[in-house]
Image 1 (cartoon, rainbow, N blue to C red):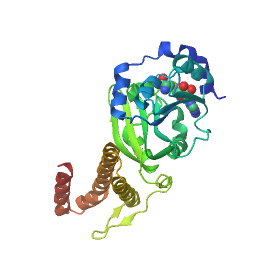
Image 2: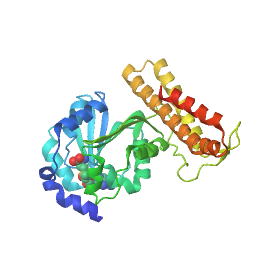
Image 3: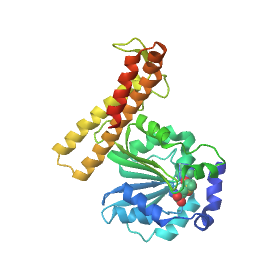
Image 4: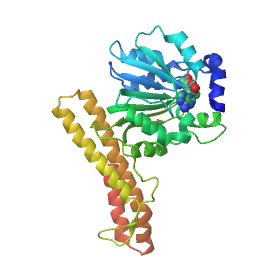
Length: 305
Ligand SMILES: C[S@@+](CC[C@H](N)C(=O)[O-])C[C@H]1O[C@@H](n2cnc3c(N)ncnc32)[C@H](O)[C@@H]1O
């Protein structure tokens, strides 16, 4: 057992005394999550089960909720409080090692959990991705602002700004539906594509993108590989949505997937715009190319419309 694990074992009995759960924030997480009744839900790092009654109500009689935590003491407190909920079960396990069933959960929730796996985020995100059904949803939630979370962890940036975590999730194959970093809470909702494609982690983090000669101007774009990866995923995602509609899938599921594509297109536009400013425009200014600067203004105007 490492130091952090021992910490949670020892803290379990007093966790609820010190943890101030704000019902309004947790309820608004449930509103934003819009979990469908009948869902199979995993509450990863459930602790004493603060979120379990909310998830139990959202899953309904046809659904199920699995409270999952590596601390036996935390699980025992959660069981004392919530084992009367018929659709809730409990599992003691380490998210870094546990053999989750593949393509099983409709929803995976991580409430105040991410900082504890931040060092292993790539591995954990991959594991949770594999455990989700196609079209399944991952929620990363904190009922505290990011700065407060990082302050609790001694100022270490264990909870990154949403755009940084978004990049990790996108490169894991997820599409962003919602990402909020407010002065009350932090909330990210992402979905796995609705097709059967297996997990493919982009190697964009490992390999610096190849400089690529533009087709009609002779400077370099550094983000070409990343842009092509994202566009391939968006194409696959749109194909999957077409199949959902052909199969007569629920409109609300289709809309969630469409929202994810919408946000993925906005994301790829931002990457191209940034690359353009960082390279093409810097070069153009250096070369006194007023036309390129004028074209950028037009492109920005179109983009922000
Ligand atoms: C900050 S607490 C949050 C608990 C609960 N979700 C809440 O918001 O009150 C983090 C929880 O994650 C659990 N945890 C940390 N690392 C874990 C791991 N590798 N596998 C499973 N659980 C873990 C801890 O035992 C602890 O209960």
